[in-house]
Image (cartoon, rainbow, N blue to C red; front, side, top):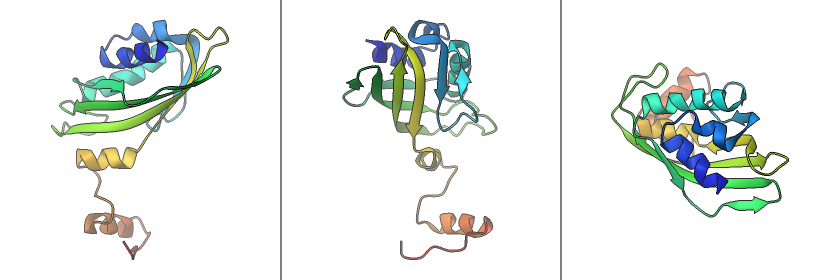
Length: 155
């Protein structure tokens, strides 16, 4: 199935795999892309960011896939240990488990992924890595004060 091949492309670190699962004009975005990336090579380049920071990253099915015509939702679990740099962040050595959903539209032939949008909680991921404070903590309140938001009460 196409969803299995999508998960395998991310897990096996084979940039060419994205060309076998994505349409030539695929449009991809997730919370870590500043702008949508276009084309299988650009998706593979984006995946390299994950592979650089988490060389052992694995993506696997986390629930039933939902299919309706040319649309499919792919719930996944992404696991790995950050042993490499991630953008400007040095390696933390911390293992993470991120729940994500990819909402996809298939190409007109319904053979390849054409539009893909990934959703996951970036704040929770930052907390897991130890780079962001836990919600409701003193560290979070201090961060909010520094950012000019003041204190939040009632948590």
